[in-house]
Length: 139
Length: 205
Image (tube, rainbow over the protein chains, first blue to last red):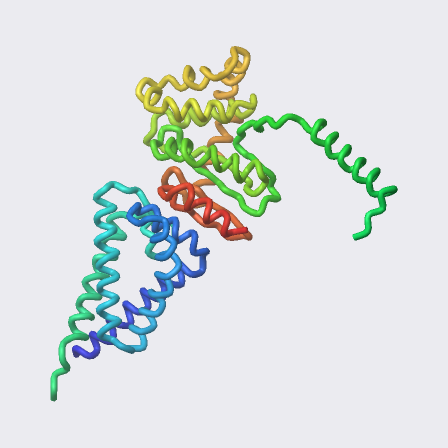
């Protein structure tokens, strides 16, 4: 049973990461840079670096999760990444910033719907990370 | 290179003279009027702005992005700019303000009326004095014309057409800025800095 749950979670999260990466990579990186910049958390160089690298990291992470390669590391990285996104989104929403979420490309406003979705993904990613870390039960 | 004084010196003199005449005869650089639609449609990039005169973020966008955008990108022929009116239903005077702006466009004062409406937004949204605010930057003759035009069914229809265009483009908040390039439409986050926006525009060329 646990095995199936792990497979289901890693496929689900893997597809989400790959989709998020593709949604950003199909547009110029400068458009994603605008989304990052709107959070007003990073200096110029940080915005540029993150805009250029994050989609590729998401793609690698997604592929690793789908294939099951280095699952412990991939699931931990996925949980950490989604957790970081979620915290930043909560802070920005609390600050009253009417900005785009930037999660799956432009045009999606940060709001309760996106927070609920990302919160759910964080819970799923943490569950996967915990299940991947636990030693396998010997039969 | 071998210089032949017999030909080169008259040629250089003629070129220099032509250049001097071109500079002397060129019209003095005066900033073109700000209108609802600016630039040339053949520009590779089209920027469409949907805004509401009663929206504080539209005021911020107008006062931070629009001036530099017009100066650096529209007047240089790099961007075709279309400013759409998108008065939100919850803003009591926004549609009236939009009508005055469109009417002012007909007398060549769109930029001036937009500037004053945004500048004094906090004042007229309290007392509803859109007419006084808009007409404060017009001559008496222009004001009389704009007052009539602002109630003209053609102007009301123009504002409504803008709203419908926005609805078609899935605009659900203001300000919304949509950049179009090579058949693709990019909604941009207007909360980003102007430098981020120009980096995006520059990356499209």
